[in-house]
Amino acid sequence: MLPSKVQRLWGESMVALSTSASRESGRRFYVGMAVVFVLIAFGGFIPTYWAKVASGTFGGAPILHLHGFFFFTWTLFFLAQTSMVAGGRTADHRRWGVLGVSLATAMAFTVVLAAINSMKVADAAGMGDAARRFSIVSLSALALFLGLFVAAILNVRRPEVHKRLMLLAMIPPMQAAMARPFMVLFSPPGAVGPPPVFVAIPPGLTVDLLIVAAMIHDWRTRGRPHPVYIAGGLLILAQQLLTVPIGQSATWMSVARWVEHLAR
Image (cartoon, rainbow, N blue to C red):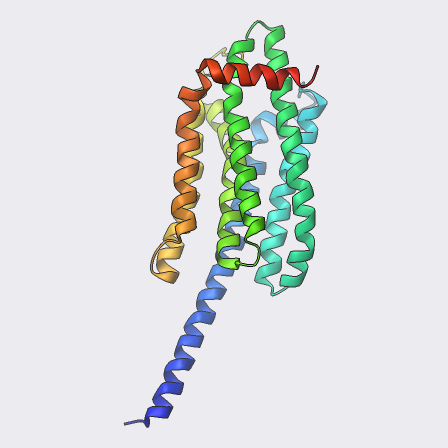
């Protein structure tokens, strides 16, 4: 039998190897998730944006191009940040984090401006109320994104919490990209104007599968899902499901009109 000291050293080395392997697996997982986000963001908008821009048939307002620029840049930035951590460049990751704050702020402004543009266009077509109801989808997703992002920044010195909050913060922006293929495949022929709010739920639930994947990864690497995923996942699910009753309320219509008047 090995001496107790040798046994202890052997056990410690096995634990260290296991921990190292777990960290390496986690780094690969987050980079892989970032790649998925990029594919969803760019691929989801192919039929309604990229293909039309390429053919010269996109007729949206300039703010939509600006909004798209910041949105796509954000997904690439997230991929770059996760890749830095995976490559051991944590210091660079933190230095570039300042740019993330600026990007998130720019995204927030363009989401609001894009929503205002949609309401004004719908107003001109006599469908303003439908647009105001549907604005709950993008504006509530924006509020959730910002809340999760701020929470991640506040927990920057707690990497296990920070990285999970950042991953969760990517989910609300992905809902818009996932909704585009649903619109192309399932919209009734000849449909015009803003869709009803409930059509945003299936794409949102599809994106939520990425949270399930993250929880499964946690289960395999740490024995149980991290509380951040549980609490954050429930919050995201609540935001998606509550858009229908809130969007139909008189209170929301007042809020939407107030937002629309910000551009006057």
